[in-house]
Length: 378
Image (cartoon, rainbow, N blue to C red; front, side, top):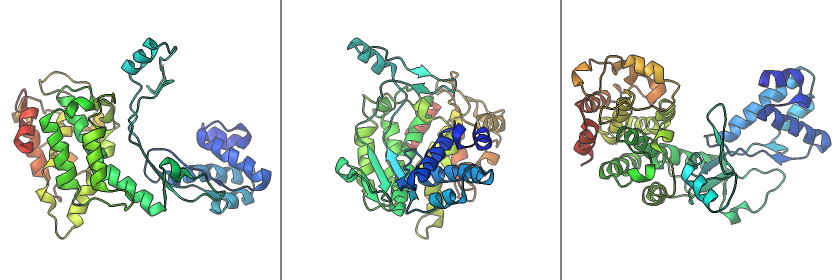
């Protein structure tokens, strides 16, 4: 679709990024008016990514003569067009059937979601948590409303980046991933229910408070300690948040590099900390590798969430069987050296042997995952 948009110009734009570029071209033609184009995508450096997408299309149009070079200069001038970075944090899981049924019982009609060909759910309602954070780079060339009165944090780009890093490397996302893989293995269907599990809450407390907080990025405008307190005590245990470990387990191979890898790299870079002393991050990683075998802690077949590396990882684990520790003959070694997954070579980090040992313990038979958690968390 993007290729077609580039070939046909702004008048025929169909892709979202092409449409944004076309609308900016209309604003340019109308009087070169300034504007802030603010991304609300839940990814790091979102403004940079949005800007790169728009500029790629606009420059291609300029080469084909659809737009002028002056339009490109207009987009590149931050006093005219800016692409502020933002950090948005509000857990919003897939529309829940229970919420749909409650709304319909209350007399609200046509609440059923539309499910797209890509298994995306589009519903007329949203089930989401109460706590929410929105941090935006204060770069608005045309001015802005007093967003801070509504609780939005307006700050500089570096602070936006630090808040994002605090959340995704320490205070929320690593805890989510640990709960996801172990929740699936232990038969949970709700994150909130996992928060009543002594071993699982102990695991994420150790990951967050004992290991992560030693190298946490402090953004200055939010307290990392207060943030993680709210996550563990209020957000994750919320029984009205129908979020599932199966949803969070999606694409784990793409998430570990940030959610655990950044902490491991910080330990390795520190002159005061020993990366090989980590216990609970390796335990989370070992749990994910055990999860990849597709058998739960009762050795029953378990459906795995989608992941672009799933087939390749399972191929490397070929021969390993849950319930049969003797089938492990070093199949993890190639995986554990993969810096694209972990951000570090786990052997160089001094953690590979620990992960392998935990992984083998979880192969021992039924309830081996639970017993391994108890051993290390207790």
